[in-house]
Image 1 (cartoon, protein in one colour):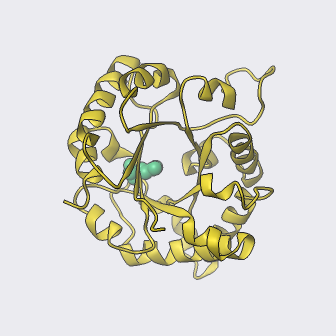
Image 2: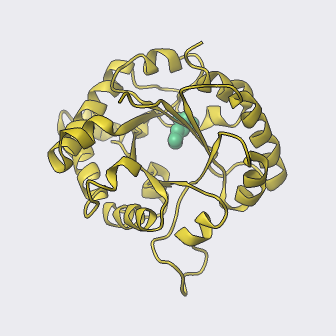
Length: 253
Ligand code: PGA
């Protein structure tokens, strides 16, 4: 079974509910009729109900940018998996580099989020990737990325793996306009797929979708998607305008 391309938008801390409704409607229209591609948008928590309403009946899926790993309790400011599923959310991003960098998400916390998501029927997108100084320091980034993958998937079963997506997002390419070359990204994806193969077996690895993230835009999406190892994109900046996100969904044209 070939892996279905997957284009996901991470709106980060952008859009009020009204702005989100408008953008979601534009994405919905841009995605209408697009075949052979899965499309996801991840608005901020506060816009999820509004966007769920706009996307109802369309093929565009709804995701959240983060999740807490407890089901309920005294955790002021946090959002649990059932709160998300009750809104029609089906995907959740876990371990985005901005969460790791600014909000203390460690590999252990990210792993708890991945497992909680799976336990509650959500599909996690596990984000991994090295920083610039790690990339420049020789070959060590490879072990670091491997380590993020194996730690992030600790305790996950092979049966659950078809619901997992991994996103390779080199931190030096996020929001910087610096895209990894398709070859650089593909090399990292192969390392990730190998690590998953060692942990879960060749079939799981062959079916795993690995997205690239970091300054993906209409100008570079075709060459990235031409790499056999790259199954899709996790898109920040270019997901905030339908004029840019639409061409990403239609990367084949
Ligand atoms: P960017 O962000 O596309 O703006 O580089 C990607 C991401 O952080 O997911």
